[in-house]
Length: 257
Image 1 (cartoon, helix red, strand yellow):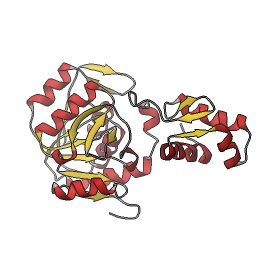
Image 2 (cartoon, helix red, strand yellow):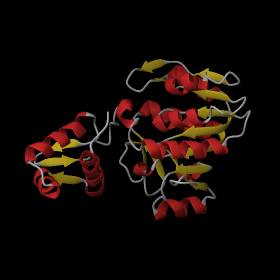
Image 3 (cartoon, rainbow, N blue to C red):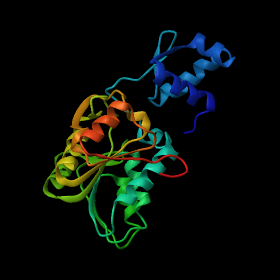
């Protein structure tokens, strides 16, 4: 689902300020209150905003937006990140690829590689990578989540627990200013934790909207990651923490790296 320029602007404004009123938005854009309410309703219906009396604010930190809607958010930024991540992976490497829309973009960017051995619980990733006949794709099964297009639960965790990989590619629902890596679901973070623990080179791939974004469950700290790939320069605290921990920071800016 696409959003109008005004709706996208409202979303960025709420993320910057935490709350906006319908009246202020009406004056800001020169449109009626009813028009602004329709914009807010469209963003709330997909979980990007939450309605409040007289306006809208950020959604709860306990729930992420649906996969279909996250797929179109920061789409170009995710493509740049994915190309950068793919450049870090050599041919014939073994790797974990976790859940999420950025992970699916990384899988697409890896299709020109040769002889990769990939372990994933992400159905979109598995479908994409099976197009390359030189790849070995191991799908960690378990309970399927239709909304997220992945497998979770003990069966999936067992696969990630028993395998060691050269690289681990994972995202995060939010990155705190203190370097804590967080997500929204306990099953998700257990799997992300195993990727961090069982890969020689964990790579965190997150777009700029994830920095200082509220998410509930902590699964790791930035200092446990070997490489951080994003699309804009991170906040100063994150840059300093990465430098102190000797983490390779890659910023995939528009027009080049």
